[in-house]
Length: 213
Image 1 (cartoon, rainbow, N blue to C red):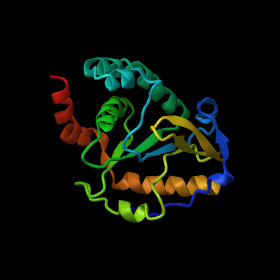
Image 2: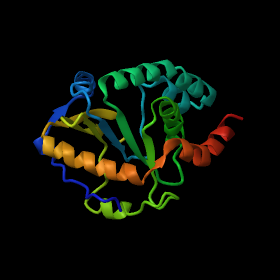
Image 3: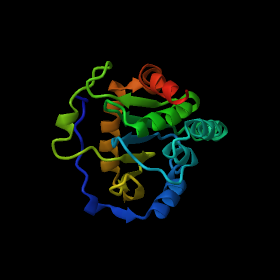
């Protein structure tokens, strides 16, 4: 179990944002607090990302095109890395992964691999995996872990998805104590988690090599 309890999150206390409003709000707030890091927790094992061209290629079975499009993102990640250094504000991500891996996770972890190579700071939290973290059932006794993004200690988003796994916006919270509680929780998971690159080479690369044949 992580050394922090899952905080309570009452969506009625936040402000609902549409998908476009969420994206705009995220861009405006991302760099608002220099010197403070941001955190992301991903839990669901399947999503759909129709705005992502690489995902579109993956969804129609064109794995080589999906990989090519992922590779095109390297320059954007390098620019993001320079901006993060300038603002002294980095983005940490914890990806909960259950086995067997869903096809979506094969694609997402492949995409995240490039981001991890450039930016680092991405770890996989595998309940019962070789890194030793356990206790997902206990953490989810009151419901599944939400998809959470925190920005610089000042903003928290609970990201919302429809029944098909397509993002439909977020609920925004700005209570600093609530943000801090979720940051501590995600940090606890991060400490127990495995670096994405080592997980990828062991668990994902053998699967993606089969797709590439």
